[in-house]
Structure formats: C-alpha cells, structure tokens
Image (cartoon, rainbow, N blue to C red; front, side):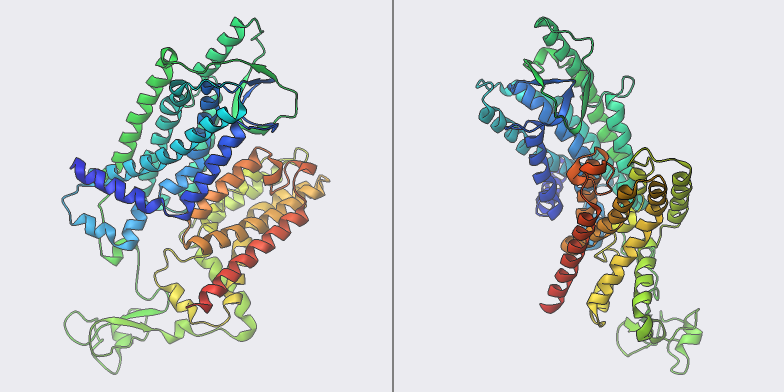
Length: 547
C-alpha cells in the first residue's frame, strides 16, 4: 500500500510540475524571496518591525523568506495544488485507478503527498534564493544552515501541509472544485493570515515566538522594546530604517512553533482523508456527472432493437414516441452515435448574432451558479449603504472576488465535453471571442457598478473610472489565461496574486485605483485590458489557422 501511494504521489507531482500554473507560482515565489530580502536599496518589505530592519544573517533571511513563502504559497499555491481529482476524472485515469487495489483513503493520501511534493519543491527554491541573497548582500558571511532552514521546517511547511490537505478536501466536494472553491479559499486565507497576526488568533505563522525572540535581542542590545510592533504583508516603507542584529530562531526556541507545526500536520492529514467518507472514486455513468443528452442540441441515437427508446425503431416517429420533449433523433444503422438536433443548433439571424452569442456565453458562465445573482444584489445594496473612504470603498475588495467562479470559466470549455470542436466549425471565431469577453464584463459591472457610482458621487472620479477599468481588465485576463492553459487553474493562480497586491495598495498592481494618485491611470488599465483581450483573440485565431 505504501509503495502504491508513493508511486501515485510521484507520478502526479511529475505531471503537475509541467503545467503553466506551477511555473507561474514558482517564479512568483522566487520574486517574493527577492522582495522579502532585497539586495539593493528597495523599500519593499514582507516582515515589518516598526521602523527597524534586520541585518542579513542566516536566521533573519531564512525567517523573512519563510514567512513570505507561507503567506504567498498558502494563497497562490492553493490554485496549483487542487484540481488533481477533477483531472483524473476528465482524463479517464481515475477509472483506471479505481480498478486497482488502491483504496479511497490511499488515493487521497497519494494526492496529499503529491501536494506536499509540489510545495516542497517551491520551498527548496525559495531557501536557495535566501542563501544567495545573504551571500550577495554581505552583511554576514557566516552561513548557519540550521537557523536558515529552521523557519521553513517549523512554520512554512506545516502551514502548507494544511493547505495541501484542504486542497484535497475541496477536490472531493464537487461544488468546491471550480471558481467557487477559489473564492471560498481566498476568504479562508484572509481570515487565517489576519488571525495569525492578532493576539488571540491561531499562531500559524509563529509570530509570537519570533516577536518575543527579536524583543529579547533588542533588549540585550539596550534598545527600547515597548513601541516595537510586528506584522507580515507586502508593503513599501520609504522611511530611513534603523538596523538590528538578530541571529534567528535556534533549536532551543523551537518548542512553541514545533508544537503548532505538529498540530497543523496532524490536522492536515485528517482534513485530506476525511473526504474518503463520501468520495466514491470514479464512475463511468454520465448521469453521475450531471450530463444529460440533448442539453446542447445533441441526441443519442440507437439502432432499432433491445435497449432503444420507445419508438426509436419506428421510422415514422422516433422523436414523438422516443424522446419526452418531442425532439427529432436520427437512428442510423450500426452502433449508438450522436446526431445534431437541427432545431436547437440553427444559426441565429445575422443581425442578432453578436447579442445572441454574448447571451449564450453568459448563460454558460452562470450555469450552475444559482445564488450568484443574489450575492451580487447583496453586494450592490451594501455598497449603496456604505460611504467611500477617500478613493477606497470597503465593498470593492470583496466585490471583485465574487465573480471569480464565473471568470474562471472563460477562454476554455473544460467541463463542456466536445463543444470546442462543435464551435470550431462555426463562422467568425473573432465574434465568438468578443462575445465571451463581453459575457465576462457583465458580472464585473454587476458587482462594481454601484461602488463606482458611490465613488463618483463622492467626487472621486479617478477612483470611479479605475473601478470601471478594473471591470474590463479582469475578464480580459481571465480570457487570456483560459486560452493559454485551456483550463481554469492558471487564472485561479494568477488572479489571487493580483488581488493580494491590490488589497495591500501595491501601486503597480492596484488595478481598481484604490491607492489614489499612486495607482496606474484608468486609461492605462483599460489599454492593458485591450492588449490582453487582443492577445487572447490572436491566440485563438492562431489555433484555428494551424488546425
């Protein structure tokens, strides 16, 4: 059993490390390591100690990069870690595994270990970056491997084990496999990170032990510690910072973080395996997956004989007797096949094809999201009742997350069977692509229109235009990511990074203009949206040309 689980985990890891989302998150992790411990005169920080900055010892560099990796990978890495069960179901690999002696807990354990290998490979790259930064900076030439790696082992790896377990759990719940799961995890992550920095929240980042150790070092050096505060988050500080010496966490200070880490790993294993209570592995029955004949103008056709629907062998009326809704079916001789229902697939009139195409794409986006419009209406009412705070509106960060499950469906048909092949035979792929883009803009405007109007009424016209430009940018980004990867994972990985920068008022990433004059101009955001949309449409045109 152990050998089979290990082989499954290794094979799954090797397959996933070749995906675009893995490369994006890995590069983002390395970039974050350079931001957390910059070599030059950068003022970007991940770990803030009031107005102080630590010298680059092995312990300090290891701690700040480990904290940055914990915050970053617990958000962006979740999108890469989840989705393995859905891929096995769509590819047919799951049914092959279901025929082996591997049990349901064993299968989920393999996915959990695969997620750990995924995160572990990124942490190794981040630790290598931390070592290189220390040597290049030159504050301390003495390399202490224990203090450099201990924060990764005590803090980052246990937290990411919990993230890996949650990714497996989300995969076993069909409703959380898509964009809704990404939105739910973003909210969970926000509560978890804020709670880790609060006095009474779970100390999943080890902040209490780290802050106590730094205060002890400051007191030993004769410096005041009463006003020293600590926080974790990507920010830029333009003040002239003082420096302090801190050797980092040593083995003798590992007790508290180690106990928390053991609890997190135990909880992670339990979270990953609890899905075995309802997960029934894989089934080839289409009805179990919610697929019904005729939803897209396609009818299953049987030859006359045993197993055919009533009236299917009657040349005079297979539709009326055989199909409950009276649709016509073609019954050629031979095995079961597919036939198009001409009434459902008839092309619309040329004058309305743009609107009809957009409406059809919008129906695909909102399919299965019955409560989405109710949530959008609640956000609109809340936004109307809340007054803006300068260029900020409190509802904007949540509002721009709400359409994530819909945007993640853009640019691909991961759950639509062979509709891409059917649509490829239709004319005007450019018009189809534009219709998909407009369908993504509709939910964006639905959640951002009221906050934008409130900002405009308060005299914040630049911020209002920024919200409108953001409503164009994110669907264009979703369309490009979906076209590049032919699936939702790349967007679900990239967009939380963009959102995190916007929430932290990183001026270059503030696509909603919440940071005021420091944010990019709305015209620049709109121009970037047009460029992303053009790239997505050009990619689809190239694919069509080389078919």
